[in-house]
Image (cartoon, rainbow, N blue to C red; front, side, top):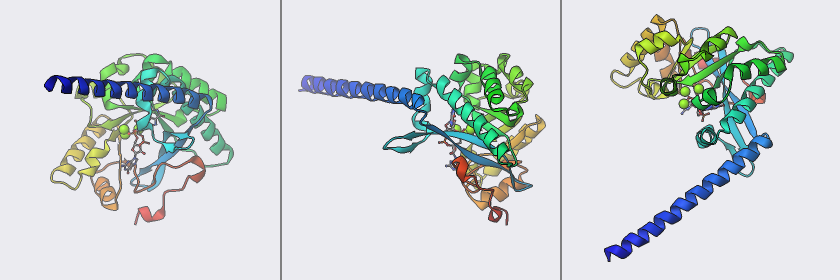
Length: 278
Ligand code: C2E
Ligand code: MG
Ligand code: MG
Ligand code: MG
């Protein structure tokens, strides 16, 4: 009968619900121990100057080297790290790792380019981000102006981070600010003008549609707006030579994506291949 079915599906739902909670608790415990055991590693992906054909900076992207599971990407643990507050510790490890790596490259005599670090809204509300960047750069003896911060357009607008003194303090350290995943949030022109980001990263979704009707018009108008506000423009998710050429024609300053390089471990750091610019 209908009644029995109802109970059955309730029990089924209940079982699934407890199962989901257990998995979550287990992952939370594993995240905690991963932090203690320093199982997080940072990979680097170059951002390429489209006119010069050289890497102008790199983005730091965290991965979890999870025993028995290989490298796990941030999309499967950042949200939980944020909900549990573990993002604060994770962020400390990422910033420390980036500064240590920059110091290492400097000792090796490498040409240093700035590294951008993704910071989520919870990190701004739960920790002193300027103090974190200041202390890590001091500890490793690197110039804080080698660091940049990426904040997604959507998180920016929700939390009103830009309203606080934090951005001013970061600028005081010489740290540049990038607005990430642009075009997926709902920022207004007045907010953009007020917040004065240095770099605008056009979301991958727009690059994917660049060859569709009007796809280029949309990108062209984002570039015009960003340039009018004094920002450099980076296109994310560039995967083909065609996309790269179109972006260059539209006046986009930089590109980032698998076409140039995947994110790689610091040891594997490759110069951008010459074939990328025929
Ligand atoms: P994001 O900051 O927008 O980073 C770009 C993402 O696009 C990265 O995914 C990168 O590997 C991927 N990507 C780069 N080029 C291409 C391409 O040509 N095609 C495609 N399909 N994808 C490309 P990833 O590494 O999985 O990171 C996902 C998100 O996790 C990042 O998005 C960022 O929001 C967040 N994240 C990464 N590292 C950190 C971190 O240390 N702290 C925080 N709070 N968030 C982080
Ligand atoms: Mg980013
Ligand atoms: Mg992005
Ligand atoms: Mg993203």
